[in-house]
Amino acid sequence: MGVLYLAKRLGWMLFILFGSTVVIFLVIHVIPGDPARAMLGPQGTPEAVETLRRELGLNDPLWQQYLIWVGRALTGNLGHSILLSKSVLELLGERVTTTLLLSLYALILAVLIALPISVMSATRRNTIGDHVGRLVVLIGLAMPSFWFGLMLMLLFSVRLGWLPVFGYVSPLDDLGQHFSHMVLPAVALGSGYAAMIMETTRNSLVDVLNQDYIRTARAGGLAERLVLWKYAMRNALIPTVTVIGIQIGYLMSGAIVIENLFAIPGIGRLMVNAVLSRDYPVVQGTMLTVVFVFAFANLCVDLLCAAIDPRTARE
Image (cartoon, rainbow, N blue to C red; front, side, top):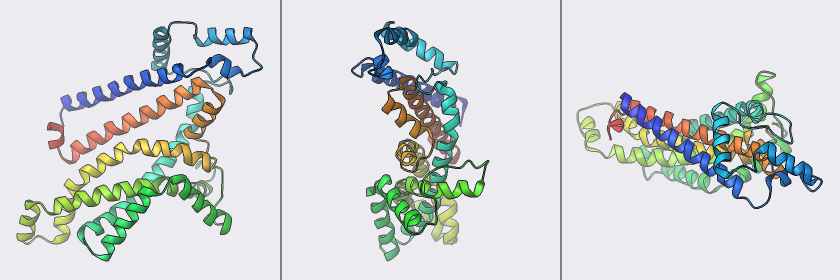
């Protein structure tokens, strides 16, 4: 992996971020209605609306508003929440760790569940285990995360009383309570993610196991375990790692639903509350943060794929 490849991937990341800022800005500003009037509500006087429009720069040309917003964002100034009386960056700082932890737990659970099942399914094709594994994939892909979350909540919290229903506890305050509050949300969020990883890994591993170099390795007397884990899995994991990175967006969007379902104070819940209250600076800031996390995750995946197989960096 050379400097040129790294520069190319960084260039793509910056291009994605630039395009996203344009889309986010236009989406907010083409919505019918006056943002200042929407923020103040029916009780806002014309004088207050005009004052807020000047504070937000809404009287400036659209291109000038965009340049001002991007320029401020580059310095870490994402605006100020009108309703919460805090800077958007401060609000994100209070909640981004919660969302990242939820996404991390869901990712870990998905990988721990998906990889063993997909390997078993690929190495024992057309057996009962393979059919069960593929059925699990179909169920996981078809099942909405919010419905699965409701079922988990009903069973383990309402009926059995094993886990709390709502809320969040910081790991710095009580680690045990933190995990007890995060188990159900992480399982609900990671179920569909695990199904995607299982399907990709199984299909990729089946394809690799049918390659000529695998047959040659087996004919040479190498142990099946060595053939599988040293030769087959190395190449089979490249599509899996790619899917994991691409589906980071799935985790972030799924976190919006799960955080509101389990009353977790993360970025997703902040975004929904901002949309409902029409707090546009917060909406822009949260959307930009999600895009940045998605773009950065894809950059890391590209670099990881190049580290696993240097040929991908030359293609």
